[in-house]
View 1 (tube, rainbow, N blue to C red):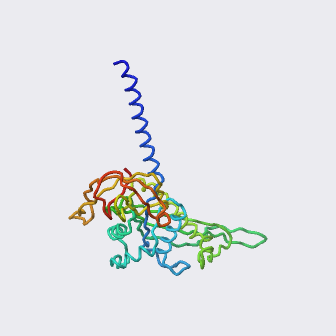
View 2 (view 1 turned 135 degrees about the vertical axis):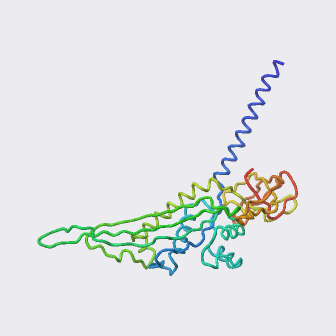
View 3 (view 1 turned 30 degrees about the vertical axis):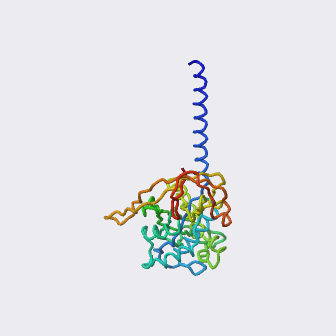
Length: 312
């Protein structure tokens, strides 16, 4: 019996090491896997005095600005605007000009994104005022003026799997300047450089940065997900690869999606029953220039196109 005690201790230590390693691997996956985001055109609820230098409305311009910064951050996979517009047109969604959480969720599901960002620009403009006081020099009086620009955005983050708004935020940023004979032309812009240097451009930049910070906080509550796009014998292809942070050797769990459950009162999707059908291991993450991965079935059966792929 005494001889068995050291053996049991060693076995328990080994089990602990394996468990810790498994948790560490899963934590690493969750940290590096990039979730997919779709940014829809913001509704323009401002006074419509301004248009982007490209001719776009303020709502479209702010959405493009956010999309660009999300891509530059390298944290997410961001859907192209053309893909979003194509699905919107094919599904006859957003005809009223305003995207709803339900329509955004439907488009998001078709595009395979985890989160949709919708919103409205509520303030976008500037004002100039004399703030009192005059500077006297050699008998002359110079008026001191101030100018400020404000950008306000109501933004909502929508879980595309359920159509539920997981966060609604109001972002309002202001930039101001004080000086002698401030020129109001600082607030009109004809190209990107002029916009970036203007007060309203600087306020818009701050608003986008705050939205991105809020998105980072919320994405921790959104589950990473991919889908099976093809099954061939013991080989499975999924729609995420190196571009999404998938590594060779990663192991994922596969679920078969059941019938969608719709709330009769709200019309929102409550998700669907899911059945765990097995696990797959990544053997190549460079299919389609890193947009897809080739996997081998490690356990289970009944794999089909459209099955959900998640971190185990």
